[in-house]
Each structure stands twice: as C-alpha cells, then as structure tokens.
Image (cartoon, rainbow, N blue to C red; front, side):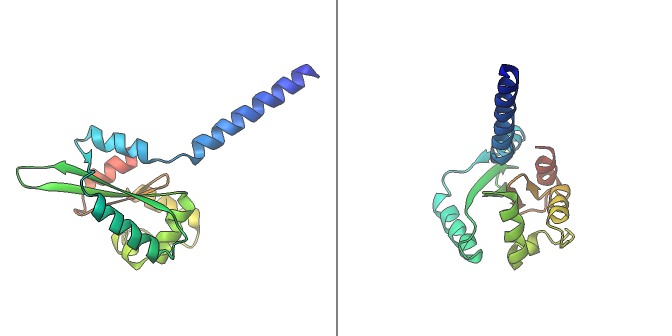
Length: 152
C-alpha cells in the first residue's frame, strides 16, 4: 500500500511539472534565440508598445490578454531591423486573434487559413510566424527572422 501511495504521489508531481512546463510562455526561448543573433529588446519604446497593445486588445474586444515586445538589430550604420513579438496567454488565444483580425491575416498571408485550429496553428509555426504562445512579425519579410522563430 505504501508503494502505491508513493507511486501515485510521484505520478502527480510529474504530471504537475509537465502541466506547468506546457503552460509556460515561449517568449524567454524566443528572446534568447534573437539575442544570439544580435537582437536586443527595446525598452525605450514602452509608450509605443503600450499604445499598440491597447489597440490589439481593443481589436480582440478585450477578450485576449497580451504582452507586446520589440526586438531590434542594427544591420548597418543607419538600418535597423525590428521584430515585434506578441505574447498571448495561450496558443488558442493566438489563433483566435489571427482569425478575427484582418491586420494580422495580412501579415500571415502565406499561411493556409484552415478551419482546424491545430492545423492552422501548425501552419503558422512552419511558416515561422509562431512559436508556442508567441506571434512574431517583422517589418522586413526576413527569412532570418522566420528561421530564428522556427528554430527557437
């Protein structure tokens, strides 16, 4: 009986840890991947990102909570490459947001709009626009950015 209790307790702990790992955000992983490629998070754009976050949440009828992050990489003397990461609470929120936003659909125009949520999300991942609960946009349609997202 003692062995069964210990085994049950161990199983519950493992399941709990897996649940926590599955529910955690992918932003940390993405941030590390972008930093390895020379990008840095931009803190100075807080007023702009707050405004963008507010507009995105309004567009989603305030049903979806998000965090908005901006990464920047100097690509020359004047040129800067910006990457926008929208962090959702869950991947389901990410898919719901894209399906309800014409603006977001314009950014991911090369992704098949599948009615099956899992298939649609998988096509976003394969195209390099999504990783976990994060949606990534770049002002330049850069394959480098998509590769970073795919490999993070």
